[in-house]
Length: 310
Image 1 (cartoon, helix red, strand yellow):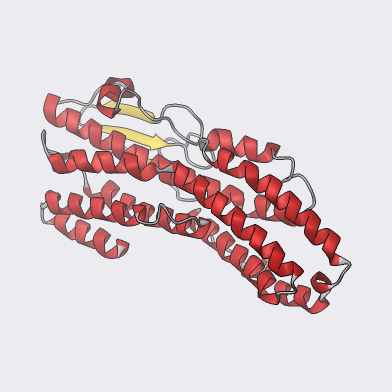
Image 2 (cartoon, one colour):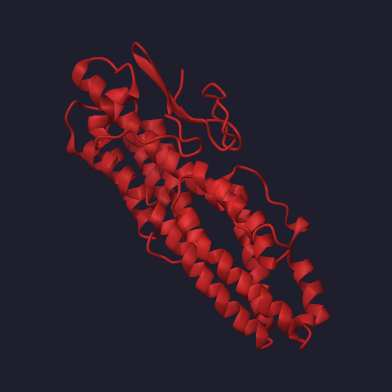
C-alpha cells in the first residue's frame, strides 16, 4: 500500500496535481502511524520502513514550485510529519518485547523447543531488517537456521544443568530491558552512549548478544526516520516562507515560530541541521549515521540524509 501511495503521488506531482500528491503522502504517513500502538519492535521497524518510502517520494516530488503561499494540505503535511516522529512508540515496543522475552524464558524452562527457534530466527529477521534499513546486505551465513539446529541438537537447554543459566539469563534480561525504554526515549546522540553504559550489555549473556548485535541498528533506524521527518517539516516550511516572502531565510532560527517555537536538531549529533540558502535554492541535510558532515553527499548507508542539495 505504501508503494502504491508513493507511486500515485509521483504520477500526480508529474501532472502538476500537487494537492493529490500531498494527500497521498499524508495518507502514507498515517498508514505508518497505524502501527504506532503495536507493542512489538518488528511492527515499529515496519512503521519506520513505510515512513522512509513516503519520505523519499515527498523529497523527490515536492519542489519549490509545488508550494503555494497558502494551502491547508501543506500545513496538514507539516503537522503530520511532526506527529509521525513518535519516539515514545518505539520505547513502548521495547517494553512489549521485554514482556514477551520473559514469557520465552518460562517456555524454555518447560522444554519448548519452538521458543529457541523463535528467539534465534526472530532475531535473525530483526538483524536483516535493521541491515536493510541501513542500506546494506545481511549475510545469513554469519548466523542463521544451521546455528539454531546445532544448538537444539545438544538438548542442553532442557537439562537440569541449564536451569541456573536460564534463571540468570532471565534476570539479566529483565534488568537490562527495564532500562531500555527510557534509553529509547532519548535522541540517538544520547541513546547510543547510554546503551553502551548499560552494564548488562557488557556481560557475556544472551541479552548482551541481542543488545550488541541488533539494538544499535534499531536505534539508528529510528534516528534516520526522525531526521527524515524533521527535514520534511523544515524543508516544507522553508518553501512556504519563500512562497510568501520571495526568499529563503538566512538561518533556520528564523523559522522557529513556524515550528512551535523550536527548530528540531539533528538526532545523530544534537547539533542544528545543516542549512544554507543560495538565492533561488537551499541545501538542507542531516549528517546521518556516520555522524560526519559529508557536504550533502546523500548515501543511504553512511552518507548524509539530504532533503535539498545543490
